Image 1 (cartoon, rainbow, N blue to C red):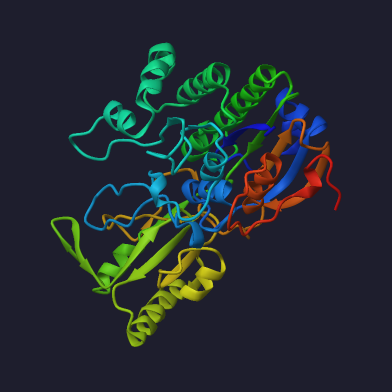
Image 2 (cartoon, rainbow, N blue to C red):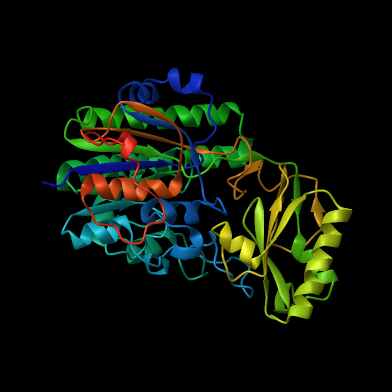
Length: 421
């Protein structure tokens, strides 16, 4: 008989002082009674959508195709996100579970809209003037289920404000588990990510949001009767870094004549930057080697003249790091710097950052890792110093006997009950 599994993704929960975890009953219980991995190496760029695609596929962004949060849509002021499950290349835990005939549930799991999922609440929002949140959610989710959940728990929400949206997702998840008993449940909670963006990584608001995450662990443990029959995994996708300066690299490319603007919109380009928080891609429509050498020279001149650029990678190097092989270059910002997509204003924005903290940086940045907890009949009481985000999916596949295909990560046998290294 296949084991059931619930995964709760706590967005941006990384690099937390162990003493804080030990002071909270839910985290403390999972550390003392389950498997705990202190440092989980994320993927590049370390954004929510590439990370969550890696969590369920065991592959790097270059392979599963979710190379950013946003699609590159140069003619649009607000670019669409990689919302839809169709964008995910290759296998995933959801797809493997379906092949086994198992029931699946997804609650705001990124890159799952319109997915072949039994109980699906899509993470998507309106980006067209004729759309509203109700219509896009109904079209891209399980509509009857969403209507039922909204009738029961809609009063908890206040738009996308946090922690109210997480409250709605938690209530909906508990209801789905109790009523339908799906085999695989994946849910995405965002309060800490939201508060870190707004207030910085060390604010009182962030600590309070971490406390709400802990409450959700306690509530889930009680629902699962302390995981006697169901495995519970708590994972984060990335951490965040505090900010002080934004860089409008597209403004610099405009000054070089590589981008042509019209009525405040990009009309055409030879080279363009797509931001990824603490990193960015440079894409080129001209693959002539002479032009690419010229472009690299201009980028290196910028990096030498100004603070903020830590490293410039070429396409082959970006691919080796797991990022988009179709880029011309990839740029890593120094800590405290991040990239802005727009061309309005000065190249360096030191007045008031768009965010107080952000992610997207290289997983090799010091003090910039995620965490992992697991408890239940299939997990040992053990602690590991480190693992990789791409190791999670093959580990779940082994526990649930899913037969996941194509994972680049390895199964963490060290944490699975009954297995020896």
